[in-house]
Image (cartoon, rainbow, N blue to C red):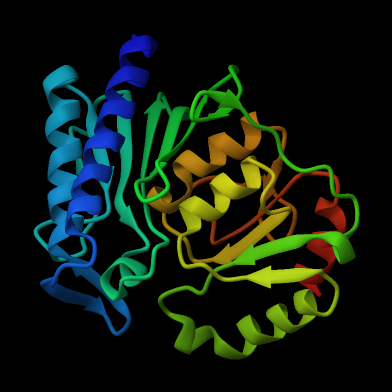
Length: 263
């Protein structure tokens, strides 16, 4: 079955990416799910495209997806199935809506509670990040690995801001100040899935963020692990897709990184 999962997951990511590419820089119908949390017509079309393609191949599989009828709910269909697809149809909606070229499709396949396949597709750069459990991570078919950076003062680190940033502002700024004081550079590009793909491919040495959702991180989690990296919570505990925060790195500087995230 896994060969078909990979084929269908890749097809769905590419199809949704084509929708994004065609919709980019055109006027959008925007609905706000929260004060700074938009959804566009492209989010909904991408999700419909992905789910329809997957259902044709796997009609009994379940879904956990970000959008539902523009209301921002996260429906899980067919919960009795041991197989589930976790979908962010357009990660980086704020960027997309403003014409900022940093967004992607993120799709993960979960079998009996474990992520077995993940794909992240950047349609503007035509970059397809993929990972299969136990088989490594790839970018456009070529193997990728995390970076070899050992020191934070030589590290390029990524972060993101949660949609409830206004309630978390003091602690978020304090944490960012600590990180800025020790790293070579800090970037906030606005797509957690792409940030994780960039950690897996060695472009970023580390990434951290709070209050991410399962569809933000499911594919990236497998990519980073299969590329040789490490993911934990800020406290250093095991990370899963429901954890309240995420610290990802190449593994070599992870403990140093955690010291500044915690303290």
